[in-house]
Amino acid sequence: MPIIKILPHAEYCPEGAEVSAPAGTSICEALLDNGIEIEHACDQVCACTTCHVIVREGFASLSEMEEGEEDMLDRAWGLEPNSRLSCQAILGQKDVSVEIPKYSINHAKEKH
Image (cartoon, rainbow, N blue to C red; front, top):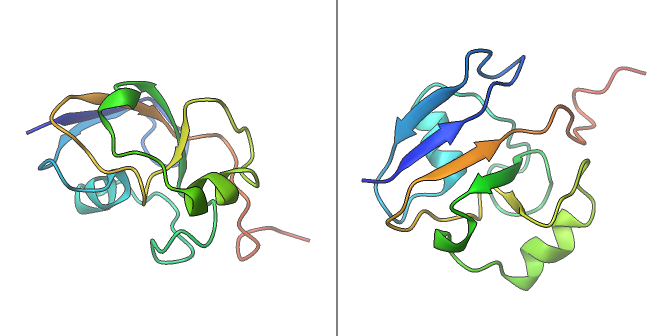
């Protein structure tokens, strides 16, 4: 079972974390199942960017990115070449390391 290493994030996991999940599970699902409450405003249907993660290790072991995810990622804060929507990034057999960006674009949470 692959391990997901989550780098420290002030809000979601200040100490960082390591969780395991079966291959075929999305990164978002695995985090939520293990008590890491990553944002997922669209309920994991690839309609927002709140679950954006940056894959620091293991990018090639994840499922291929589809066009809808690529289009949506263009709107993500802090986009990097190894960015993924965690609801669309499906684990393969290898371990991955992810960073949750400091900010996300979530209109429901923004203060005006």
